[in-house]
Length: 124
Image (cartoon, rainbow, N blue to C red; front, side, top):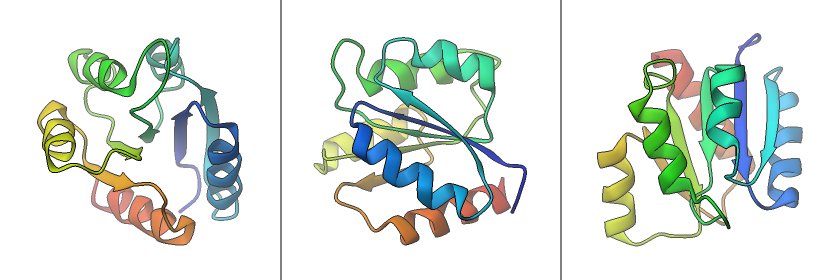
């Protein structure tokens, strides 16, 4: 599955690095973005095949970014996988209602996450 681009949005540099390494090993093009501020604009610039988005970020949180992505014509059809420490049922429901395609709770298994992303992109 080459030539697919993933935009990673998280405020934790270690998570970004871990994800970056794992997806690059599977021949994905990866764009890392630290934090929520400017993330929506970056998504519009990159127009990735998939976005992995953290929810708990300072300044502009993932809820705001997700809502912006799903309300904009140029980004509304990009699948968004939410990756967060918030595992409550109401958070999962909210993410799906706003437009996330999947919800993964941290801590996570990187190889399982890569497999999930491959599955999402194959069915997209």
